[in-house]
View 1 (cartoon, rainbow, N blue to C red):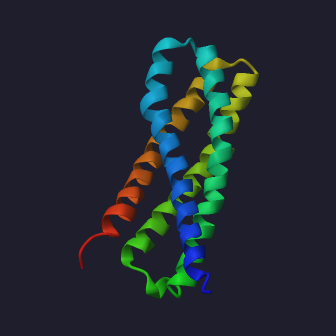
View 2 (cartoon, rainbow, N blue to C red):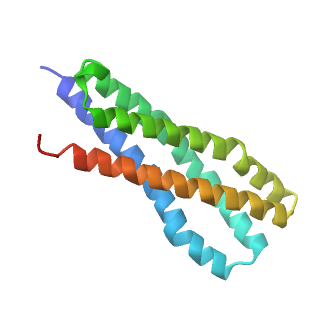
Length: 160
């Protein structure tokens, strides 16, 4: 029995699920949670909520950052014979995905780390500055993630 189609199905399913978790989580945080929290909670509670929420969410993003490239490259090299065998939009998705990963790494190791330290020190004014930076970068990463999603779904089914 040829197991290759099953491996591809597993890889593309993991790839898509990881992308949905990451992009969907950013969409929820940016479009639903952020506006409500900004109106309802005082800075100390708001920043503590964001720190704890991001701590939990970033565990899932780390998994996505591992699963997406591993499954993507596995599909490219096992099913398509390398980059020469894929369409231009796969190259676009790879480039945008790398940008997203780099942006996440920056958020995680710079403003998020500073936010956690500021909240721990109860310096909520400093924490608000770092949260604003995170908000901007997550908004940009969300936009890129939505472009990648539309590219993956729309261009895959475009008539030749």
